[in-house]
Length: 168
Image (cartoon, rainbow, N blue to C red; front, side, top):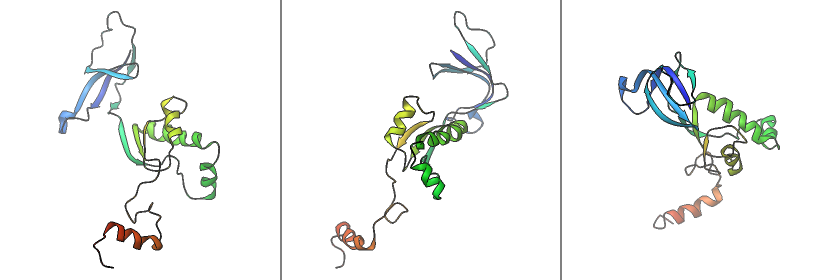
């Protein structure tokens, strides 16, 4: 059992206004899951092996969700393209997943184009460190959006299919 002890400020993520901020709280964690959140108690729990982490100068929040990310798209220059297509690409992605996202408080990322099921599985198995991944696999886009690669030759046929009663 780990206790995040005497947290300076805890934002609960569910309440409104000042009711969402709690001071001097303990968070009890067992096997990676939060078991309890309660007012700080400095007494050692009876009959339990506990590791206390002093959080008296920290603010704690629930994990953040990044709703739009591309962990395998790092830029459009030749150096970036070479790196994205190299055998080491998953380990470059881990730098983004762990150093940027997890260290920034992100516990879930919705990757909307680029990340693969293999990358997700490597994170789930603990091979790579990163947040939970929700994957689109292929980029999602609205018609005419940045990931809509239809050319003018396909537009007329698609319009006729979508709007059969339309003009000629």
